Image 1: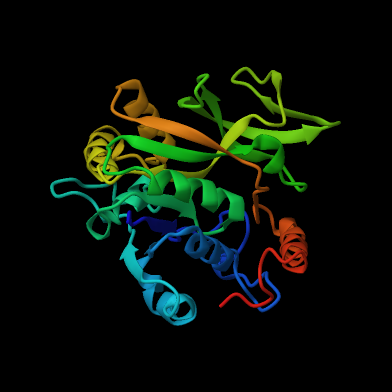
Image 2: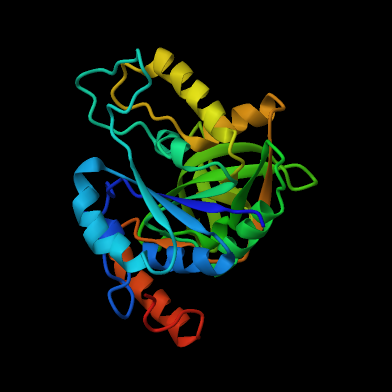
Length: 301
């Protein structure tokens, strides 16, 4: 039986929403968004969870978070920090910003030797997304370069309290990813979904355009590609203060080099998360509606 693992990127703190949003209790019994993701992952067939956290957060994380899941699924922890660099590489001493999502993934390299999925800790992805991703990864059978991502319909990922940034995806006729372009300031205006292009001209996109919410599926050789790409990134950008090493950039490069394919898996799930403090109540209400509808039990763990 194919083993599959979930990697949860939990080292970041929300920049626009004060506090440790990963630990904000939003469910009926103080459940966090991450609790729902872990619950969905276990029932979709993920057999192990690896959390990428900050080292200074370890004690609280083990006490408050891991203790909940320990009886339900094997869990491991690894650490992301700005000094976690390959041998021989240095950073600008003034840099305080983490190195980005793909650097976080790289931190799990020694713990994972099977197909795996990556998610953000503070996004609510929905039961259906875990199911379609698990099915793909369980069917991989030792092949390399077979990646996937959950393609959310952009209209299901907007915030009522401001604009959002999304990785807008282009696919070929077989549903394979051909390009991801990060678009900022996406919003709904008079029933149309729009964003400003490079020249500030408003562009409309259809409701069901697939976007990435950082839910990716990889085969294990992705770590080797990531390690090599991170060294190249540091050679070019290592002394900069803000530039980050992102997952979509490398996925794009691997696709264009013919080293991997990435299937965009359509998900009907509605994404939600706390991008702005005003989103919080909406998330509480949506979770309550899912509990009332029987999608989740009243108490998860």
